[in-house]
Image 1 (cartoon, rainbow, N blue to C red):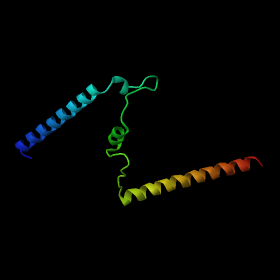
Image 2: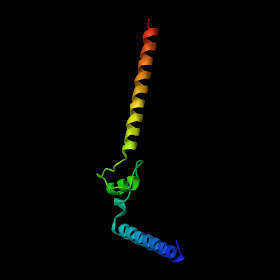
Image 3: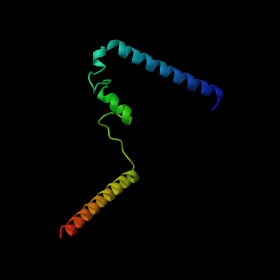
Image 4: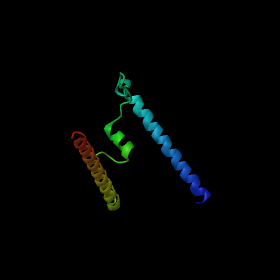
Length: 102
C-alpha cells in the first residue's frame, strides 16, 4: 500500500469517526436523560433492542447468519456427546443408588 493510499484510508477513518461522534452528540441532545437511564439497583443505560443485537452479533435482529456445514456438524456432534455423557452419568448414579439401597 502506497503512502497516498495510507493517508486516504486514515482520512476516511477520521471522517467516519467524526460523523459517528456528531450523530451520537445529536442523539444525546435530542433525548431526555430519563429515557437513557433506569433507576434502582438494576438500573443502567437504556439501549434500543436493534442496537444491542447489532452490537452483540454484528447483524440485525431477525436475520439468521448462515453457518458453514462443518460448523453445524461440529455443534451437533458436541451436543450429542454432551447428552450421551449426561445420560451415562445419570445411569451410573442410579446404579450406585440401587446397589447401596440393597
